[in-house]
Amino acid sequence: MGTPQDLALLDAGLPAPAGGSFTTRVGGRSPAPYTGLNLALHVGDDPALVADNRVLLARAVGLEPASLVFAEQVHGRGVAVVDGPVGGALPGVDALVTATPGLGLVVLAADCLPVLLVDPDAGVVAAAHAGRQGLAGGVLQAVLAVMARLGARPAGTVAALGPAACGRCYELPAPMADEVEALVPGSRATTRQGTASVDLAAGAEALVFVYPTWWSGLPAIMKGWLERVMVPGVGFVLDERTNKVRPGLGQMRRLVGISTYGSPRSYVRLVNDNGRRIITRALRMSCGLRVRTSWLGLYAIDTSTSAERHAFLAEVEQKMAGL
Image (cartoon, rainbow, N blue to C red; front, side, top):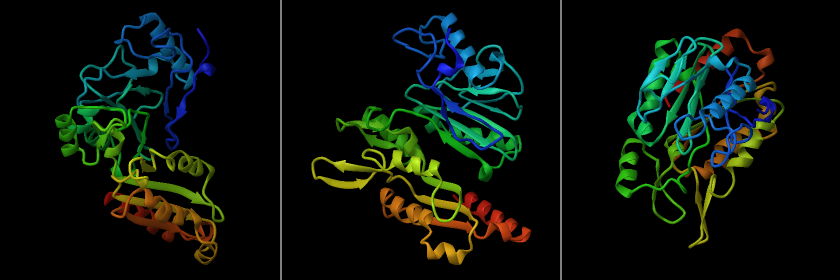
């Protein structure tokens, strides 16, 4: 059957106490053409092998198999609140929300965009299947509304976007792509062959970076993210006909950096505040001239007062609410 250690899970980077991952094909029992960790019962795979794969996934994330909850996924905007184990997929929904610890919310995706959301302070998590129809229909807005009913705040909610078909691959008829663009501005794209397409992740219009600064450098995980983004076809695009470079994140309208510093503001300025420069200057070049940048910093945090910290948090919340 294999072991949970055979699986290659991609950590979604959700803030504690929540945890989240995106699966890959690595591990699992399904033969070709599924080849590995297929979790879907509706694609013709052997149900017994799919059940084994789901057991492997549950064990890999430290849960009982019965604690995994699935959605039927009908390419809509339906959301279900889950408060315990469920037998079978919840019908008619594309997103799941819970405030109950110990449950694993699962959505399945191939070309579509899986989105994981959490408000760590409220203890509310969600998983959404955002395909072309669901994204245009407002499934993510519906998820945030349901999370709010359970006590989550949009300004305190973190979202992680999983792997999905990019705009260079997701070909659609031009009228259909235009229809999605009208509802999700920035999603219209062009394939490698020059035909109409949609980039599901491109509907995002803001990048928000939150991390602690020690001395003046970026955290290693932030450097790794930049190394994956600042490459041809992602952070910038090389036009082979004109040999000119254009921004690859041109749909972005806001760049926001939020950081705490152990050092006082005077020292941070002296050493050039590298993180702030990279986000508000270097990364801005990948977003185009229309993007607006903001930076919020709390300096000398170890000697800051309670009033200063609360004022900083209030400023951050106000900024997030305005995005």
